[in-house]
Length: 407
Image (cartoon, rainbow, N blue to C red; front, side, top):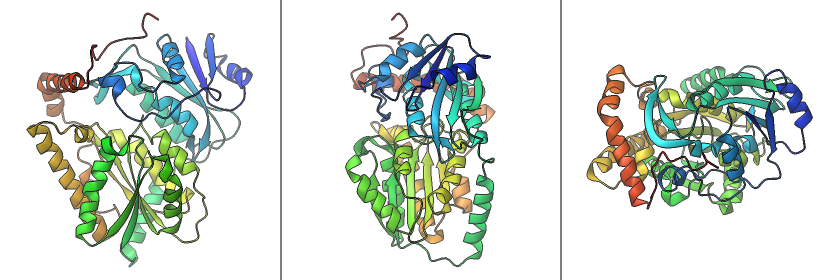
């Protein structure tokens, strides 16, 4: 069966059916505009406390029950910044209960295990989408679900030109090298994680990074977008300061939908120039896992009236939230210390184009010996750790439970 999640306002059922007529005969179209669907907040409850069941009680459970019987998933969405808008991304971010917490090596990369079955994925977009970026996103999402990309279809308009991120980076690096630009004295930092501040790995990374800034005499102000009451002040700070860093976790291969919503509320014309840089992190170790997110971030500053200051990219951040034994604390202390050093580096250079920043990411892919050791030893250790966390959270069911299989 094919499930279509239409996130556009209005009924596009006839157009969607025509577009998919040659691909699918049995199509179930769900118009989500009238449904109550919140942003994923990254709480991990659907993995560690109520396996397969989202902690957010809204209309998305209707979709989860349909996904269990679905082979193909299409999302119909408007576009913003060349990508699907926050409404389209929101329904994908909530897909997490279809996976479980256990980790495996699949097609050469670290992946979460499937809770049910492989899922193929495609996008139908409205407006000016960057087709190259959307196609790569479809491919990555489908691979994470052990499925195939169904491709990208434009609903009403030609796509934009191919992503020019490479040119943006080259120009920004050349400017940083050849121009005696003033180094930052004060930086506005936005925590783009939807997770509440006290549980946010991103917040821990920011704290370490700003220790490095402060040691070099750089001041900062911080706004957490998970708190909607800070949005007005965050917008004002974004528009009136000349040096901004957004720190964020990778969510379903790109930005969290909450951050996309905030960015869509920003004016594109500024009264003064500004440099926009990013700190992008992920639970998986491999640098390759974050490259599409980085590519999107490269294209973003110019659309917000800013210049690009580079992206600090690093995986392996999952354990930062769980520092409950000496070994994990030792590992995470080392990770946080490395972010403090990068704060010092940013204070001295004013960007993330340095050799230190490039090296900071680590390996693009786990080496063969790493994969072998993971399969022989670490896979079981990681599984036991997850089960220990789950027990501490009061979980009473197997982490690979399938709550909707018989419903």
